[in-house]
Image (cartoon, rainbow, N blue to C red):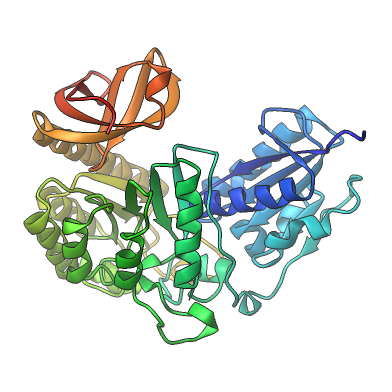
Length: 442
């Protein structure tokens, strides 16, 4: 019997990319390929690319090199956002054989008939206007939680962002299909599902190919809350202007949705927010945080922020710093602005020097450490539920509470992917929290 061809995957970027990689991998397995780890020798290496930052672009070349070291005769395919934005650039990277754009990536097995190496990467990339149909995805088997894609694309025109160019217009999965996928995930014994998309608060737009909203994000949340077998549902990043009070109130009473919100801010200066063409001012953000704290005082609130945007003066940055310092949030994801081709921001005046960007980034990362510490301290002595992960890290198993406190306890393989009632006792030197079990598995 002929040996199965082996395929390996590497994912750069966001949770959405992870969900899509997992779906593409299942397509390969359905076609008779054997999936192996990226560290192993494979016949095909598929790299799912990201183009949110410069760093992801550079990483791509290193990953191709790594694949070629493992097997210099392997067929290398690039898919994803960077592959849509700059296909010719990727095709020219030594070792790359195939580059597929936004819609073609979901038909990758159709393009792989001949696995012989090409002198130059072959490109199949649509015009982004053609990326107007929806392909559902979810990840299973990769982690103890699953990423469930509910929406794709974005109609916003933020001046720093290439995502609309890479992923096309906003469109949503049909509600019944999301529920079907959620049931399939729960039947695999996965305890937590993270909802993901490019702009998930816009859910409902483009459902069944219609421009108008068939359902709202709140409809989606309410329907998922009733799916049997799901222990936990977590909302990934959601725009502050799309996170409605009704949704916050529903989550506070929900059976499955956890008290954890990740809400992009990008700047605490209204001047900068306007230049970014964000669809809110900082006062809206303050209101959202206040509402969450009112109904869920123990909730975890994460924030995305960009430093060094063109025209961001020292005064603007300090406005952001003080705004975040005074806000009752739990941690920050700090992004240093990087110039992206074909965006409005790249043409703007007032370019911030790299050393200043770096200094501002360091200041906000320091603030994030302080915020996370304060949040963890506020949780000591409380009872929570933890879901344990699968890795043995230096003799410890880690997990996350429903409100995203990272906890640790001595390694025990029987704890993997199980939920337990615990009491949070103290913060350890590494920043995670020690715990005591309150009872047996819940």
